[in-house]
Image (cartoon, rainbow, N blue to C red; front, side, top):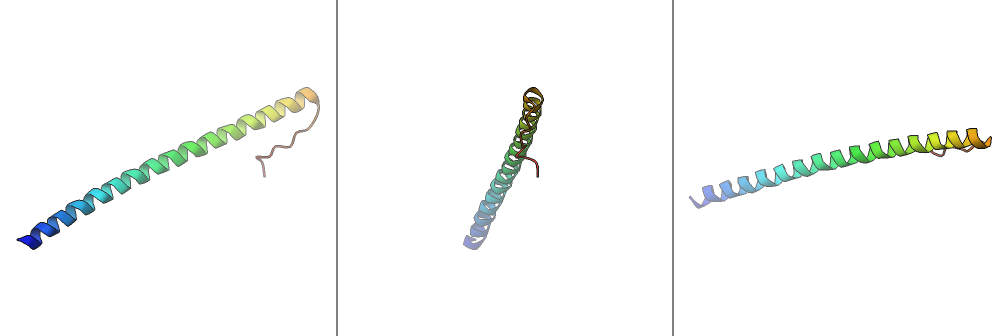
Length: 67
């Protein structure tokens, strides 16, 4: 009886922890995806600003985000 209770408690704890870990992993993936999208948009904005400044001034500005 004592062993069965111990197994049930251990199983419940394991399931709870694995569910929390999975949820944290999903939140991390969503945050990383949002950060990557924001970085991409910032690079695009800087690239357009560089292009526009080059047109206005006649000077070429190197885009540091392009390889």
